[in-house]
Image (cartoon, rainbow, N blue to C red; front, side, top):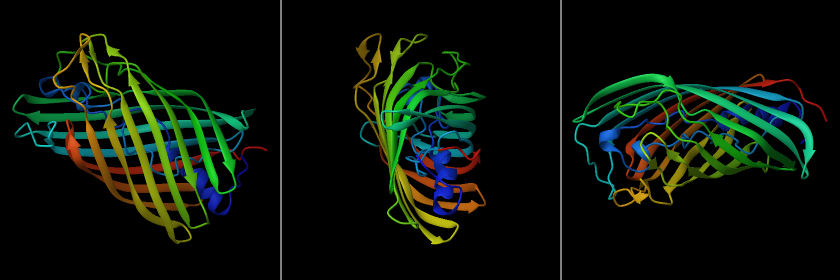
Length: 316
């Protein structure tokens, strides 16, 4: 991995963490009266966050600090046929998170070793025929102790394993909880292709395996998530394009070891525009995502503002 702080590669480094790994910024919390598609319709991971050069990583010896802001709103909760099943449903989520990424510079399997950690803070409010609830707290933090990163010409990629921690504040009797109350793990990989200094094509894939919520004996099904973007520079420091994700729950939810309902498998395809602006070594990202073809999950819109700041110049 050899990057400089000048030109396009500088911008690539800065935007790395803005598409980086961290825990559920928009975890919707446990909505007990309308639970479906993973417990409470939520996930330990905020699908759609990793759409900014997700395959890029800091160079050996360097670090990245990122800050994320997100607002999600939904006015419908889809059933298994994609129809709104709860009249008067309204969900609002505001999130802020920080993430730290460090490349240790140690050579492993032809790449370099890196680690990631992040913590989100959320405000969630839900309203419907089942009542009104709101809560603020820390969501599902993430630890990625080991990942291996590579850079070969115009290709940048990495692979690793994420560990999601339960939300620290939880009461099974509350209408709203911040984060999911279970551990989870996910093999994950991302790739960014930059055929020239103006164009970027990226993808990130992960498969989340959820453990059981010990307070409710509910085990959410496993989740496949593909995140992507395509960007093109319209000016030296400004790029525009499209971003989004595909979410598919691949196994049934279980309650006390038995299939919950009809399995409650969730699905969502969310797409929207993305803008990336570079100010010196800092990257600013704004993006929008609109939910479509939704099953067993809320139907809404997500707005993101993200900032990435490189720390250190690294070494060879």
